[in-house]
Image (cartoon, one colour):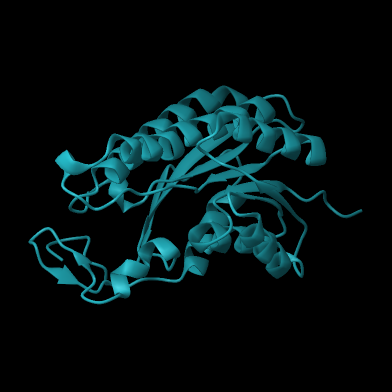
Length: 253
C-alpha cells in the first residue's frame, strides 16, 4: 500500500524562491498547496509540478487576514492535514532615505511580512496540534536582512528581524505539540526581487558605491527547504543560511 503523501503549503509560490521550493517539494513527493496573489503564476507552477505530484492553487493575499483564514480552511477541507508550511511570501519597500519612506509603504511591509507570517503560523498551529499523526514543520523565510541591513531598507530589514522573533517563539511554543519551526535566511536567489542586482550598475553598497552582485539559482534554495522539511520532527534546523557564494555579505565585501 502506497504511503499517504505529506501536505506542504508554500506562500508566494508563483515566482522566485517560492516557485523553487514548491517544485522541489513536489519532486520530493509532497502534495503542495500553492498560495499567492496571482492565480496565473500559481497555475504555471502547477503545470510544471504535474509530472511529479499533486498541487492545489489558492489565490491568497497575505495582507488580508480573511484570505489567510480561507487558505488554511481550504487546505484542511481538501487534504485533512498539513505537514509543512513554508512562509515565503514577502514584500519590500522603496529604497529611499528612511525619513522619506511613506507610512503606507511601511505598513504594507509590516502587514505582509510580519502580520501575514504570524497569522499563517497561527493557522498552521491550529491544524497541526489536533491532526493525527500530530505535529508538523514550519519554515520561515528570513532573508540575510534578518542579520544585516542594506542601505535604505528599513522596512524590509525591520520586518525580517521580526521573523526571527516569530521563529524562536513558534519553535518554543510548538514543542509540546511536536511542531518544529525553523528559519532559512537567503541571499541573492534568482527572482523578480533580485533582478535589480544585475541591471545597470547594480545595487547600492554601504560605502556609497554600486555593484553587480552574484546570484544563485532558486532551485538550490528549494533543495535546502526540502532538507529541512524531510527531517524527523525530533530534529530541527533552527537557522540555515543559503547564499550566493560570492555575494558581498561576509567580511568587507
